[in-house]
Length: 135
Image (tube, rainbow, N blue to C red):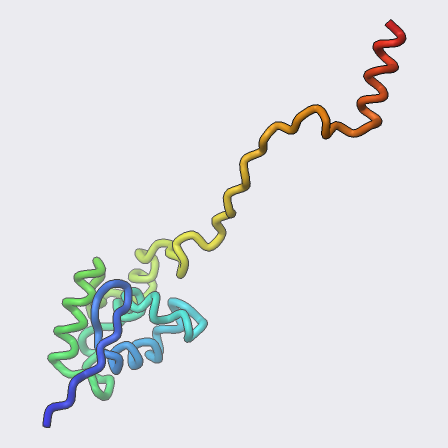
């Protein structure tokens, strides 16, 4: 019997759940985002901090998984870190990205329509009649 891997959709591409779980709990994950619940959104950045060697040292990640990860990273415009490249250099190239593309977008305000004169306050209507009487 063959066992089918569950596949999770993250940022528009597929990676097996076990790889997502391993990478969101990887030591470098906290360098990208502190809250564990938000790590799946930033998975390309988290994985790109690793070298091939570091990935191969993770239990459950082999050559086939690394090849799949590299293809997935390429789809997201990322790559694995080179052995001679420092982590801070990779982090500096991330740029700013939010979990929600428009987290602070204000709701649109309703259009203001002019009100008829009948709704003016009585005080304003009385002041107009006093001005007219004075003239």
